[in-house]
Image 1 (cartoon, rainbow, N blue to C red):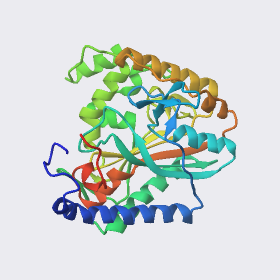
Image 2 (image 1 turned 45 degrees about the vertical axis):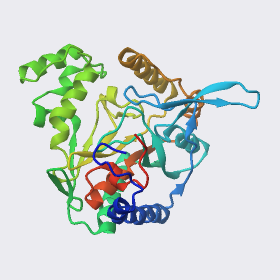
Image 3 (image 1 turned 180 degrees about the vertical axis):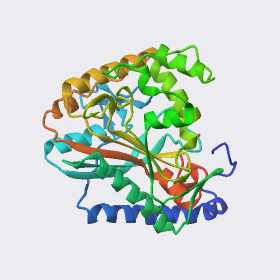
Length: 349
């Protein structure tokens, strides 16, 4: 049972209240699969059990033990995204693939987070990331059309999903909403300086924590000052993330400080996270090792690297891809205010 109700999801009266949103979810699932099929995406089915669940600092996985026929076990994880497997399929020769399935993330439960949730992830080989951005915006409009909702609303914020989307870079958003010159806190190669960012925070009156690691300060400013201003009135595409905050994205041509990474927001809710994909295995290994070193510093743990994935990057074509939170999209398209309201059976607490 969840904190916001004492009635279990299976109680007939509560199910009757939830059923309209669940039926809308089923319609949106079908419409999404039709949309993908009409554009020649092949829906694939990556396994959830992996040797590495992902190698980003702040993602936490569920671990388990896979026991072989010999009775011996090996550490395995439920994936936080099907990304590694899907990129292996791109390396194998697939060119337009999608997955709509469950993923798992530990340490995450709130109105917008659930330990097990549904992710729509898809990739286009030999396509710019602008194409994936347009795909993502089209799917957001599709969700509104399927349910017939006029405006998305989450808490006190509203958004017209059919309006022309705002597009703003991370650096522009930090300047506009926080008074921070983000690019001034890194060198020409994108190496960040936490003290330089902390000094700017002090100048504009923002509280500076004891941990002055650049990434920590970046996240604090993003969450407190920038994200609440995104997706209000219209959908926002926040793009050109700092390269040090985009472990799987390629740099923007001509500026190594920023990357081809974008996120999409509606009503202050993050809906999608996409990249122009990095295909350099040497650089990818370097980034993963740096991410795992920071994870160990912050949380005292690290996950193994997927050596099979790194080997596959030598064969992977240029590509762009995105992960879209399907449950959150259903929430906005139905007016639900908690993710459990659009899940058929929430994970027990």
